[in-house]
Image (cartoon, rainbow, N blue to C red; front, side, top):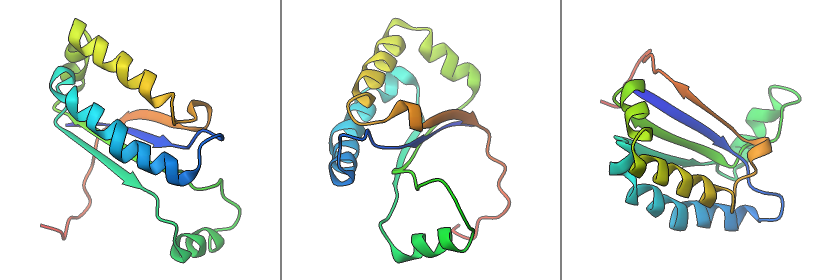
Length: 126
């Protein structure tokens, strides 16, 4: 499988609370509504916690860029499957709709998106 990883930051005119609410309650259902058209197998939002532990992790490593609001992960069976989905009118419409919605709350200039392939080192959760 391949995974799209989207590391996101909020637009500067949106509070962190509103960002997280919109991402979870508005954008997430939109992604779910077009999952079939995109041939996506799995979609996960990982919201960054406001926690003293996060502050300690950063302090222990020296100067770092500010924390992202979170990470979106979307899985496909293969790059070819993703490309096939984006080659259909339905997939193109879904992608355009999601990008338009993301512009409502994501700061594109300070975020990053890329495809990855997982290489599991261990998994004790099974």
